[in-house]
Structure formats: structure tokens, C-alpha cells
Image 1 (cartoon, rainbow, N blue to C red):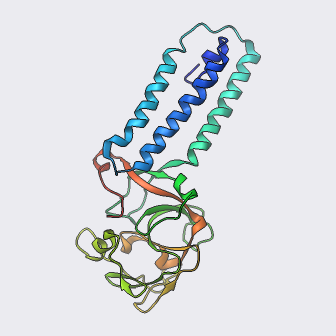
Image 2 (tube, rainbow, N blue to C red):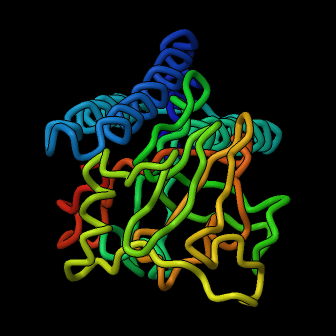
Image 3 (spheres, rainbow, N blue to C red):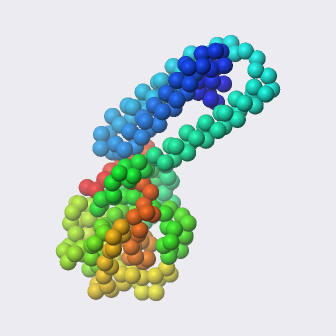
Length: 271
């Protein structure tokens, strides 16, 4: 029963406070552990997983203490347990989805940093207290953006901040009249050294629009507007096509690749 609803065995055997403590304690610890691991990303290597493992250990202790005789509760009692279990589990799932989430990548727009088939951890909490920074990889909704696939979520890198003037002079990205070289990832992309292709213009008449199709084309970002690019610009539909991204559309920061194991050590930071 405790597998379905943490702390329920304690609660039904009369130890109600212990049951509530185990329920909220284990699930809160599990969420905290996952959140710490996700926010740390690739910054601390394997150490980031320790809080998550500690939370799992606490969960196992709760399960071992749950093997005890439970009084008969009848059909109505089981209905209450099932309804409570479904409701509480949905609450915790909703709560977790507002803190962190996992995504499977299904395009080559961020290659070679993130490739088709990668599973990524995305952290959402920090965006409630601060804005995204240049060079960060973010997840955003396409609501209100003239993309070929409205109503979906994309993963791209922040290249321009509110107030910036953006243009592309292949293979370089020009921000406020200067070649962008910081964070270092932009210099790496512009080098055009394999597997990177430099920053490219889009073809005029491309479906979905072409805001930056000539070296003289320029985007000026307004307040709360960002310019996002895929690392693999020849294969990316990004701000070069449809223009600025509203701040309200950005939902999370990409922190790490966790699957497949062969890709888990691939850095996704701004270096």
C-alpha cells in the first residue's frame, strides 16, 4: 500500500502523525533531491546525484517500516484510500512539473551540443527569480510565434538580450556592432570548425518567415524580448526566421543530458 501512497500503512494502523510525516517528508525530500541534481547539472559531476540518492534511501526506510498488519477498512475505506492516493500523487506530479521536467530531443537544431534522441533535464524554478542569460540553453513555448509547429516547445540557446541589436555576417553573430565571442560557445560556433557550421543567414522565402536573410538585416530587441538560435543554424528554425522571443514564453533552463549514458558527460553550459 505504501508504494501507492507513501505513509498510508502508518496512517491506517493508528500512527496518523507518523503517516503524514512519512508521506510529506519522503516526497518532499525526493523532489528536493531531484531538483538539486537538476540545478547542479554538469557543474559538479556525479556529486549532484547524492541528494537524490539520499531521498531514495529515506523512501526505502519508509517502505521497510510499512510492513505491518493493517485493519480491515471495507469497500468505502478503500475508495477513500484510492481517491486520496490518486489526488495526492497528481498533486506531487503537478508540483514537480513546475520545478523541473525531462524532455526527449527530436531534432538536430542544437547539434552537436544536444542531438536527436538525447534526454535532457530542465530546471524551471530559477526563472521565477531571475532572467535567462546569454549563452544559456532554454526551453520555450511557441505560443504566439509564427512557427511551422505552433503550440509546441523548442530547445535553443539565448544569443540576444533585451535592447540588443542583432545581425548575422556569416560565420559571425554581430551584437551591438561587435562580433559576439562571449560566452566562449559563440566563438566556438563561429569558428566553423567541424562539427560546427558557423552562424548562417536564412534563405529568403523560407516557410515561416525570414527576418535575417541578408548581412544588412538587423533585429532590435525590445523590453522582455530575446533572440534564440540553434547551435546547428543550417538545420534550425529560430529567431532568424520568426524574430524575437517573448520572455513569458521561456519556461526552463537546460541543465544536463541524462540519457543515453554515452552522452551524459556532454556539457550543456555556456563554455
